[in-house]
Length: 458
Image 1 (cartoon, one colour):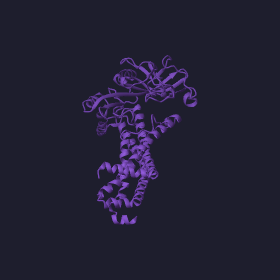
Image 2 (cartoon, helix red, strand yellow):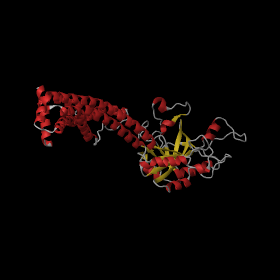
Image 3 (cartoon, one colour):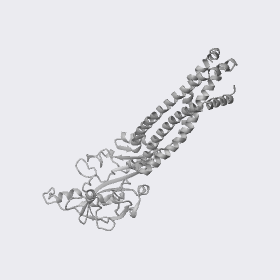
Image 4 (cartoon, one colour):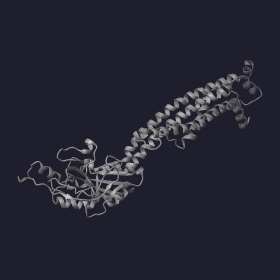
């Protein structure tokens, strides 16, 4: 028999038993819908996590710190482990490294009116400033490499408190301190150790009373956009400035004294140059990030990249997606048993028909193919309808998450149920294969059925 004839005969046989066919197809629909929706949920969670992280950090960046530098408890450094211009030149000469941005971090005390606070100051290059995509609420980014200018993050004011009482208006009462960083004179004290020593009645090495350090008024170039208390930018609580201007100002203020956060020699004296607190390395491709990160660690530096954390999260999400898919597969297993049962019942009911086909000389393999096609056709119909229901159910889930703001509360942006393009055809093919596997044993029984015994049975 020709393939087309077998196909028409299998469809005709299924049509004769419409109710049983519909019920069996319904089981496949439920199974396929469960698998597709569960996989789509896992996929949506994974993609949403990636989108969230991409909005905060680049996946092709490496953050490098000196093993004994600004973020370490040790103040003495070996010259070979410093973050300086020599290291930057070496890194730029390496393959796959596109750019290297140095950062210089320091802290200061600020006073304005009745308020006092601390400032986290980060000096960056003009090139990096242009790549940071910082939203500007007032003014502009610092553009001078000789005059120190401060660009305030929108959350810098949360670090201020009333000097007399020590009460923070923001953290205690959710109130923003009455400070206009663009117009109010803000006095900045860079020598924090000298300030606290003089405030506590301390003395110098020669026994004389410690003097109050000099206060400076630094011009504000601008303020980051955003309300106080919104944390949409990593630098919202920092002050940004030009790194060369910051280096010049720190050298002018401290002269031959050790600058806070900078390493010193074994005798306690400072180095002649300022070392960077951090390097931001931009790599050409995400696949090369891990190799360069490991290379820097072997050199003795503390190197971290987003890709490592993301890889761990991806592994966890893949596990969740596999578990969700396995839950859906249970429903498909039930559907496969239903197909097997339907095909076995069909063989018992069509025993005489099978016997007649064999007596007339029909190839026994054609008989097997006939039943396999019937089982596969049940899987095909169930797969197509199941995929359709999956899309409808996905739209409903996404609409429900948006209307209830449940996605936002869980940190999920966009659709939570996302069906990838490859999943739909794969689900249909999977349903057909499962249908044919479920129908294999019944088809084998039909093929081995004795024609004389089949005719006598009727």
